[in-house]
Amino acid sequence: MKLANSHGRPSLARDGGYVDIERASGGRFSSFDDIFQDWTAFRDWAATDRTAPTPSRGPLGPAVPRPRQIFGVGFNYAAHVTEAAAHIGKPNESQPLPLTFTKFPSSITGPTDDVELPNDTGDYEIELVVAIGTRADRVSVEDAWSHVAGLAVGQDISSRGVQFLGPEQHTVGKSFRTFAPIGPYLVTPDELADPTNLSMRCWINGELRQKSASSEMIYSVADLIALLSAVTPLEAGDLIFTGTPEGVGGLEDPPRYLVAGDVITSEIEGLGRMENVCRTAAPAPDLGQRWHR
Image 1 (cartoon, rainbow, N blue to C red):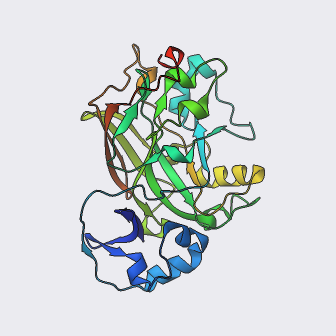
Image 2: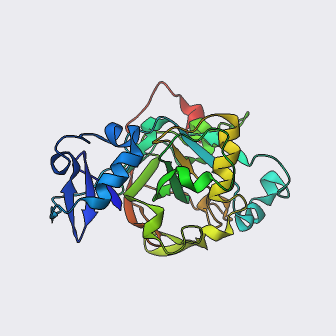
């Protein structure tokens, strides 16, 4: 199953078109909130629905538009750790948790929406995004995948100038408006031959910058769910940005930050492709010049 956001309405992507879920279910699932409140029932209904799709009528919105919590994971690919070694030192896989932060839910945006750059240190990070389907509280690694609703393509956009202010501000630096594009669909794991090994690529203006696979994660999807759920319950609809591979612009010498007009293309095997254009954000005078680094 592929869940989509077509003009703000939950839809099933099928056979090149879309099925409006509220209409097809007779009002049983009228919103994304309804869907995630009873993901199991929704999944079972979707598996039996035979409604004919209608053609697409425009760009899609974020596949999960209103998550309650968004978790981010840093330095979860060994090659990315290596390229950032000057900042963080050697990886330590024996630590009980990877670098973990949150992103404000208001940073969510769609797979073709513009990315607003508040300053001149914007950076890209392609990431596999996991959406929780059923509440996960102190779950085991072995049971973790049973709590997953689906997977999506994501970009963990960052303002490095804010992120690395002293003290470091990972959450704020990664939570500006539009800093969390996701989509184009939320794909259930059974749609994928191997959901633990998905190739991923990111281009800037057509130039390939990142290329890896989710199997290269230090902490797997199951590891992350087990670790995070040991700290706090993961609720249906929560999102986990699982980390980015090597190739981010801010770690090049000299850094290659995003500028207005740049096109970020993000693709993960079996999940689809996003294309986001960068533009300059509206002025925010209350932030002051100290943020514009």
